Each structure stands twice: as C-alpha cells, then as structure tokens.
Length: 104
Image (cartoon, rainbow, N blue to C red; front, side, top):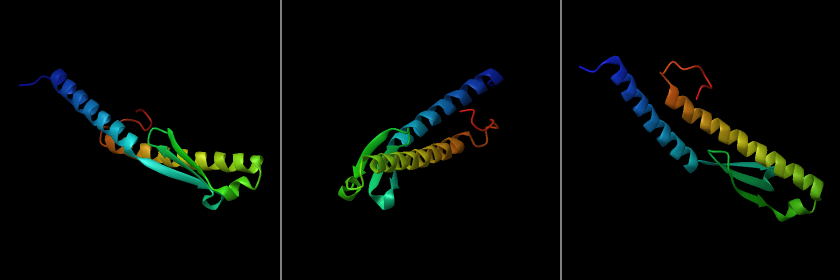
C-alpha cells in the first residue's frame, strides 16, 4: 500500500508532465493582433514571443509617428490575446487542484 508521501510524489510527477505538455502547446499556439484596420499585423506565440510583423504599404504613407503607434497597438493586441490563451491553458491544467488563481 502506498503511503501519503508516495502518493504526493506521484501527483507531483503527473503535474510536471502536464505542465510540460502545456508549455509545448503554448509554443505551438499563434495569435495575430492588428491595428489600423489590418494595415499592421503582429503574430505572437503562446509564450509571448513575437513571430512576425506585417506592414502594408499604405501604412508607410502616414508617417513614422503613426506607423509606430500602429505597430505598438498591434503588438499590444497580440500580446493580450497570447496572455489570454496562456491563462486558459494554465487554467485547464490547474482546474480541480484547489490552487489560488495566478499561483502557477
């Protein structure tokens, strides 16, 4: 018969395996943020790494200041989507564990 300490170790190992799967899934997720009606788009993965930036030629006609604002807005949009995806994935992992939100 397994003692409580062995059961806890087994649960921790299972949790580590699940965490590794979630981390792998997050690197496979991509989201795209946009600004200016899509003239600037930014692609970000589930680890909040920027994977691509696309700027349509018409965005260049508006000047550097507006272009930088559009890039910033698109990055922020993509990052927010990525964080939401990561929170959803982590929420599924920790569901039922009774852990306080944001602990992992």
